[in-house]
Amino acid sequence: MDHMRILMAGASGFLGTPLAERLRAAGHDISRLVRRPTEAPGEVFWQPGQGQLDPAVVAGHDLVVNLAGANIGDHRWTARYKSVLRSSRVDTTGTIARAIKQLPAGDRPRTLVQASGISWYGDTGDREATEEDPAGRTFLADLCRVWEAAARPAEDAGTRVVLLRSAPLIDAEGGLLKPLMLPFRLGAGAKIGAGRQWMAWMALADWLAAVEFLIEHEDVSGPVNMVGAEPATNAEFTKAFGRALKRPALFAIPGFALDVAIGGLAEELQVSNRAVPAVLKRAGFRWAYPTIEQALRAAVSDEAPAPR
Image (cartoon, rainbow, N blue to C red):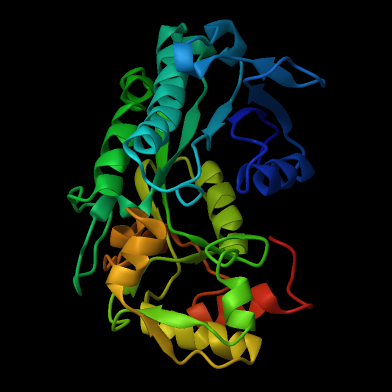
């Protein structure tokens, strides 16, 4: 990959931190958009809540990566927090996309790599969902729809837009495993309901490798399902996680108990999402951890490799 100047939003988050490190290690220059007074070289102040980003900041960058957005699982889904989830995504994306569109063609970045979510598809039941499928009807599906639409001005301006429809990620330090690690280590791991619903997932190492792959493959644009090579049901995930930790995982959590414990997110955890990575497979991407068993064993192993 040729040397690039890269502008990143969300560079200090769970995904942004290792991705920025990976891209720097590959020899690229990283500038970070921050919403506080700048403190270090390479930081650029912006105010996405007010739609303020000087197009001159974007000019001359080869690539923009936007991973900004409030965490889905950090709070109960009150009406107020749903508004935060929406504005933290739509405002940041729209601000970046409009800044790109305002630039002369020669100053625009070639590519915008834009975060989205695999929840775009809503409840797919047992049906496989590819990137060509329409948005579902859950709250998160609608959120993904408006999130992706906010990037349209950049696409209209001729910048290649790659929409990362990311699944919950498998990593010991965050993502899907962080809230589950303690109960599973204590032998209290449990499937949700009957466990027949399909779960979207991807190993963090494969996610990082796939983003770099997509940056390099300029013939790929539009939505990309960032998921493992082989889908798994909730019951399969639960058994595999228990085996990886050498702990029993014999329980089941009824849906109504989740409703009481975590509110609106409970509905999403009971949704069946059988999204498959049609675009990545067609483009020739190769997974280091294609199965949920491999991903979980690597995540909890003391000998697990660092994200590639």
